[in-house]
Image (cartoon, rainbow, N blue to C red):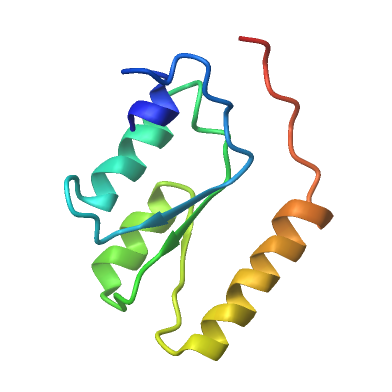
Length: 102
């Protein structure tokens, strides 16, 4: 969060074009991070993909309500395909909005 909010030594951090977020974080719940990102006018337009092994309906519903989606295969080969498809789609195919100047 400090990086995204440009706090605590991250004052000149670049804004990411895409956020990959795990729901199972150590210090802060990923759902809380997601809610904070989508509540912040400077961050909410950044596409966010939630990576998790959870298939709980509550996690899926909460993620979609916060304008994101949810996926994470457990096995390595499907995981690698997922990362490749994310890269192909979000970094080469999608036209993202221009970032506002600082």
